[in-house]
Every structure is written in structure tokens, then in C-alpha cells.
Image 1 (cartoon, one colour):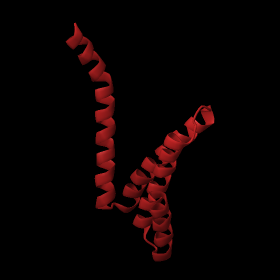
Image 2 (cartoon, helix red, strand yellow):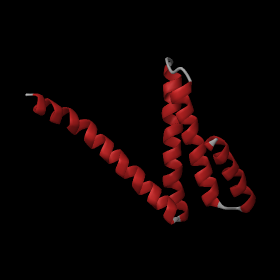
Image 3 (cartoon, rainbow, N blue to C red):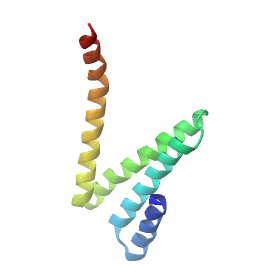
Image 4 (cartoon, rainbow, N blue to C red):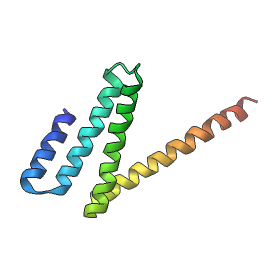
Length: 105
């Protein structure tokens, strides 16, 4: 459903000449294609994993590019939230195993 919404936003943005709608629509579309590939398509092959990463990365790159292109506040908030979550995920992925090993000893 969100994949269709993303496509509709892209078309709406093209009709209205709204770069913000196009950016949000493209980001939703690429993000949901990545999620569908991850969850519903068997990803034993290396090409499918690469496609998952490419589509997910494109969704994030589009948001950052859209912010730098338009300076829209909503895209800035999305970009900051995404960066914060990435930093938190990387920090926790390195800290939690070391903390868990210290707790067990």
C-alpha cells in the first residue's frame, strides 16, 4: 500500500511541480521495494542481497539529496532522525556484546 502511495506522490509531484512530493514519493518507493525484497523474496543469491542494499541506500540518499536541494524542514528532520538511528544502531551493536560478556562473568 505504501509502495502505491509513493508512486502516487511521485506522479502528483510531477503534475504539481513539487520537488518535495517527488522526493518523499521516491524515498517511499525505494524503501518499500527494499523491504519487500528483504521480507518476501527469497534472498539466497548475492544479487538479491545487493539489490536490497541498493534500494535501501537509494531511499536514504534521496532524502539527504532532497534536503540539500530544497532545504525543506521535514526532510531535515527525517535526515537527522535517520542519522541518529544509524549512529545508535552502530553504537549498540558494538557496545551490547561487550556489556553482555561483562555481565555474564
